Length: 573
Image (cartoon, rainbow, N blue to C red; front, side, top):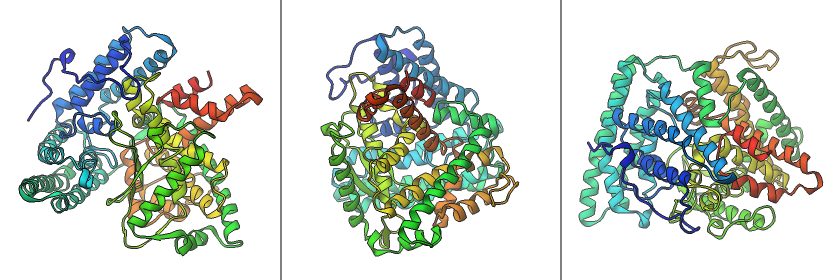
């Protein structure tokens, strides 16, 4: 097994000029950032792939104890160095504060061994490995050598992950049964996905070596799934709730703030009630007198709001994305040429739609991946516009793309690290949905109801459920839903089905597992949106008639990603 063996200060770095902006500035802080990004990419190729860092396309991350320790030591070493590094100007002051905040959080998580179990539901090692392979699975554009290399690396990566899980088990740290079962299932799903690769990409001699690599990777996944479900699960706790201390670490990691959790829990209930009132009003415009659930069901079955087949859906969302860019450019935003096209694709796996930012050198375009569980069934579209505005423009594509292109005021880590700050990133995505409502893009009441039911309601419910589940808070008296009882996964499932209309059941189970596997992540959307809206209102009040929405957006996106406390401070400075 190849290990990270270079001395900490002498890791070989692949120095490249920053794209679309000439050579990078040679300040001490930028040099530090470049070293950190390159060293991080060596230690975590899967993270590098997500961040768009080129040069590691054929590699997977090692999840063995030695490499996990090396990653935390890199964060500690860089954090110590920041305080010794001079900063030049306001942009570097912000950059240093952002990097210091991020690294201090990573060190705090490492000190608490918060991820000693290394299992997750949406962004753990298993999910990262699959994504790393999927991102190379690009039809005729597939980099065959890189794909083959990643497949051959998968058995080794799983061996290292097992070593880390066993080390954690010896220390009494084992993921709950729910997370172990979910990851075992994800291993089986990944194996099924891999078995289809040779037919898609294989011919001649390459077909033979690809078959061998897929067979070895599939066997490794089978063994690992058996290890999880037959060995590790024997020591796994049944209790999912992680408690206040661990939850606050999640809040710090995903939001970059500290919360009064009881107060935030109460606000989540209030926000959920507000959204549901708005839904009632929107539903009354569509079918007066009909209850909201009946209206939602009718929209699902209305041919006016359906398309047939994955290709038809891809064309429809591509047209929607292109139209939003054409409308907003020059009016409420200035959209650079490289961002005036989004690559919309259909993924074969289950789960929510997601956005993948452009690569660092812009060779990989910004991409929206839309997932379908059954591409042969009629596909409802009434919730699609809000999701596309969230994932595309003015949402993630504009935000992450502008960040990636900004070599004038942002250093390399700032340009690449948006998805390490979900409060900032997902908060902007939800803000983008609200903005498009304000600008009149949900004139069709069905599309506005889709924004409320598909985005706002679920994100408000996540605050209630995520905090309630992990802290086992009681359900407030007067809600009409199991008043006074404490949250359990069973009650959360019932709540999502009855109050949020979620389905099919598999998606509800996915949501519950997600909350319990990543404490604090699910609340990043609504609380991030709250900070964006509050900061905009504060600037509007301060500037009065001089307030300019386009200028506010330009300044906000120029700041780059950061935690919510720092974001509010800088936006209202």
